Length: 334
Image 1: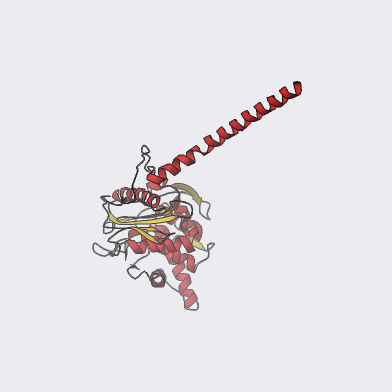
Image 2: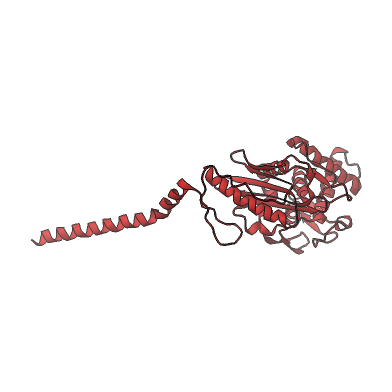
């Protein structure tokens, strides 16, 4: 009898363990089941603006890009992984690029020089519009000054990069013939325009390396919202290290002279965009507010968005609207 009681007790204990295990598995998988059920009828949209999280249920027919009320003159949204255009607004309209120009400058400098090449800041560079805290005769590695320049949109930094890279290109092509700063920069700008031809960006061209307005009627560079996205797509694929720092809100960096600098991103919304890959701002009187960003909307699902001709603050509001709409569009097209 005792043996039977022991067997019954063990059976009872095994049943309890089995029930507990099943209950644990149900609780563990419940969130995934719930999310699957929600995805059958719509997509949960998480606010990226720091506001209260909201959930929007959408049917397949709804277009999340309708009624966005953008300030921008032109915009373009590309699902890079799928090669799909999610949104386009006057995407082929030629507009001033302002400091988006610095993306091409960084790409071309990386083509000409090694990452360890030394860039020296000259007095001519410091005279550019804006003060980013650089010093005359301060020396930098190309990779470091590029990170600083793109993140802070430093006109001084890109001027120095253009001077050194342009001089190197001239020396290579002219068998060591001495050059002055203006001819070096001219050579560099020609290289930027040659690069646009190589990439098939027929509506993009550069008159200077900064994107600053030349006068009240002529901008330093021009391009389209579509081509800006294509340029960033090229950089992400072939030169990801060049733009990596632009996804950060702020960082400290030292020049070769051991001078410490703090680089603060000119895009204050980088902290609001999930899984940001790259970001670049631009603003001049002629261009108004420009912005381009790339972010992952899922695993290996990069989205690139450009905004041209908005206002100084409106570019960030436009971008957040487009980022939210992109997440919703991706959710409904899965």
